[in-house]
Each structure stands twice: as C-alpha cells, then as structure tokens.
Amino acid sequence: MEIAPLGDSALIVRVRNQFEDAPEQTSNEVLRALRRIEDARIPGVIGLAPAYTTVAVFFDPLRVMNDAARANHVIESLTQKIHEALSRGGRRKQRDTSARLVEIPVCYEAEFALDLEQVSRESQIHPIEVIDLHRAAQYRVSCIGFTPGFPFLSGLPKRLATRRRSIPRKEIPAGSVAIAGAQTGIYPMKSPGGWNIIGRTPLHLFDPRKDPPALLRPGDRVRFRAITREEFDRAAN
Amino acid sequence: MQDLGRLGFRQFGVSVGGALDSHALRVANLLVGNDESAAGLEITLGGLRLRFVDDRIVAWCGGGFDVRLGSTSVAAGHAALVRSGQELMFNQPKVGCRCWLGISGEIDVPIVLGSRSTDLRTNFGGFDGRALRDGDEIALGRNSKHAQSLVDLLREQRISPWSPPHDWSSPAQREPILRVMRGSDWNRFNDVTIQRFTNEVFIVSPDSDRMGVRLEGIELKRNHDIDLISEAVVPGTIQVPPGGKPIVLLGDCQTIGGYPKIAHVISVDLPIAAQLRVGDRVRFHEVSLTEAHQLLAERERDLAEFRVGIKLHVR
Image 1 (cartoon, rainbow over the protein chains, first blue to last red):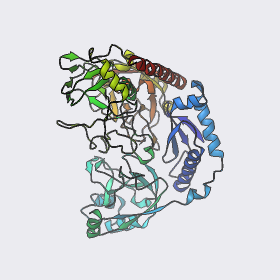
Image 2 (tube, rainbow over the protein chains, first blue to last red):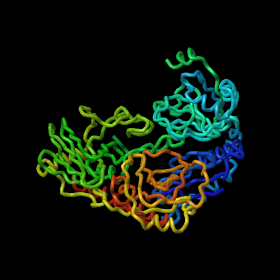
Image 3 (cartoon, rainbow over the protein chains, first blue to last red):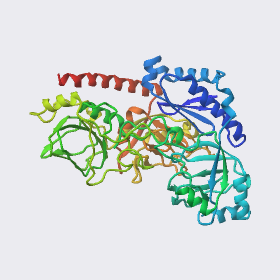
C-alpha cells in the first residue's frame, strides 16, 4: 500500500491501483482501510475521506510536530502510524462488508428524463428497457464528491455506459439521476454538469441541517425504484 | 462571511471553504480581541461601506485596499476604534483582491456543519448562504474583555500604533513567487515541462474564483494522456487539465478531482495565492516538504509571540 503526501497537510493512502477490474473488492478494501485508520485515532489527524481506490488522511502538521515529530519527520511518523493501523486486525472487522441498502425512488417519466433518448440511441436499447436495466441493477457508492452529497455509483449495467454530453448543461435540476461512462449518479442540488439525465428523485441527498448531511455514505448499496409522476409530486411536497 | 472553514465533512463532498487566507483572519481577530477562529468578513475587490451601531474594534489584513474611517485612513494590520454611527469604507485595492475584516464581539450567525462560513457554491452557512448585499444587518456578539480594554485604550489615538509583520497584514504581490512541493503526478510530466513549470511566468486568467485560480502561459504537456482515477484534492493543489493550463485550487475547491496534480502550493504561501487577480504574473519555486513544515512551524511560533505581545498592550 502506497502512502504519499498530498500537499503539506494531507496524505493519500493508495489501497489499490485499479478500480474497474474489481469494484466490489476495491470498495471493501478502501472502507476497511478507512475504518482501521479511524479506529487508530492518530494524534493530529483531523479528517478522513475515501475515494475509489484511496483514503485521504487530513492532518494538522503543527499538532503532529507538537505530538512527536520534528519538521523533517512529520510524514515518516504519520506514515508509520497509518501502516500500523492498517496491519492491525481491528474490532470492527465484521462490519466491513455489511453495507446499508438504500432504496431511491426515481420518476423516469419523459419530463424528467432529458437524455433518455440519447442513452437509448448510444446503447441501441429501447428507452423502456434502459429504465428496466437501470432500476433492476444494484449499485454501490464508490465515493461522494463533485458537489456535497453527490454519490458516484458503480454497478451500472455495461450496456448502459454512455459518454458525457459534449457540451455540459449550465443547470441540472436537483434530484436528477444521470449516467456518465460506466457510472450513474444523482445531482443533490441544482448545478452545472455533463451527465446524461434519465430521471429524477424527490429525495434530498444533501441537507446541511442534518448530521450526517448526506443521505448516502461511501460503501452503501443503492437500488432505484420507479415511481409515477403522482408519487413524485406527493413525495416532493 | 468566513471563519476557518469546515474540516470534518470532506467525506460528504463538502468543501473546506473558510477564509482563503486563514492566517490573515486569525491575525485580524487577534488584533480586535476575538477568538482566532471567529467569523469575519471576506471582502473581494472593495466597494463596501459598513455602518456601526455601537463602539467596536476593527482590524483588517489582506490586499492593498484603501480603507477609510470617515476621513482617516486605516492601514492593514492596525486595530481601529469605530464609534457608534461611524462608517468604515473599503475602496478598490491597488494590489491583490481580497481582505479579511475582524470585528470585536464576533459575527453572530448560526453554526452549520461546524462552521459559520458561507458556502457560496452550495448556498448554505454564513449569512443565509449568500454574499452580503446592500442593506443587510449583521448581528454581533458582545465585546470581549480584551476588546473592551482596547475600546478604552484607543479612545484618544483611535488607531493602534502596533501591527503584525508586514507580510502577514499585506501579503499581496503583483508578481509573486509561490513556493510549491511536488504533487503525486509530478513524474508524469517530462523534464522539459517541469523545468518550464518552475521557470516560466504564468498569468492569472479572468475566470478565477474562490474555487481556484486559472493560469495562462506555456502549455504543460503530460507524457501520456491516460485517465486517472479521481482522488482527493486540497486547497493549494495545482491541477493540470488536458488543455495544459494549470489551476491553483483555493478553499472552495471540490473535494475530489481527476486531473493530474503536478504540485501543491505550500500552506504558508496560500495567503499569497488567495490574492491573485487577473493579469498578475506568477512563478513557482520548488521546496521540500520538510521546508514547508519548517516554515509553517516558524510562522506559528511567531504568531504565538504576537499573541503574547498583543495582550501586553492592553495591560
């Protein structure tokens, strides 16, 4: 496992070099590394954030220096502690693979599915079948980013992979469910973006007044459930 | 409205945000007797008038602004007494683009996700999740004991004779050299490109904001254009998108990115990066990670001394 500096106040722990070859296993390994580093409560570490193949470790260099290390040993000292944490078994081992399953209601009706035609054209699959494939699959949150609460989901049926729009939209409505490349995702709030929109959820994926503020967490399993326009309106109000 | 930002929420995609020059805000807060982490105002390119309804101590640090209290000029890094009814005016800066104003008693807005900072990208926190507008009224807390002593002390002089080191209160430069350390993709660029990266001048382009400073200049070409897997980025990270024009990320940057990271501006030079404005000419100079940490430790030691010194003035 490679541990490399990310500026002078963070480190990146590279758990694997590839993601697409084994998304499930990679996610498990990343989450396991995350929990072990979390459990180690390393002095000076102020935050952790997982991504596809990595865990970012944010630290306060001054606190690390106060704690143990001289300026020329900050990284060595942290790296050593992270390695120790990673090689430790950890009491929360069983929890590693038991992720939550979250069901997301999605209205796939034409009014919301702005790019369903495009996805259908590129994949040569009838729009109704596109929707069936999209909602039948099970997904997993690889990471949260782009905007607060935006989940990048792996597990999209290969046949649905669609290139990003060549000209991104200036404004994508909040709740839009979209496809880009081999991934699907949900725009928590109105924002610009280039993904192909195939539906909309009435759920709020990000609410700064809640703790945690994001509906989904890395590692969560996700399913989409098709709802009608009426159900969408009821849920949205 | 900005404080020192949101630290523990990056795993949910929430930017760190906060004052783009957190050191300037800390110093301004110390000067007015606030807690260092108190929220202050981040003022971009001036054009601000603030009317006070009671006696407050104020201090600002940042770009080369012309700040006036009535007809009196208030220089960067000096504590000033503003009497009830007086107006504090920020005119356009000659150099740099932002400054941070500390106001005694601290700005009183609700804490959202551990911070009083406004997240302008997602519109939450701070003052209704937005930049301040004409007519807004800002609630302040009570002056601390230290601030009250300053009010008494500055009744005659109005403006403190003491001030922090000049490069703390006025870090902006038109042709700065930013010290950088290697990023994890440094080796994906060939020697010639790296040499040019650390030797040539880059010009700040107009589409820069709190998320990042976009630079024009020589094209930074990668050896192979393979796709990278998105991973964490931080304020200070210098990304190189396919066009070869580098972007220096600032406080409101996304939490993850997929562009190669050629380098990172070191923490002590982020105050200079936060001042870059259109047309400024930037160069990069490589330092080691150890140097970055030494410089940070030195600045913190100096700040600790400054903190003690400030207390001595009000005895």
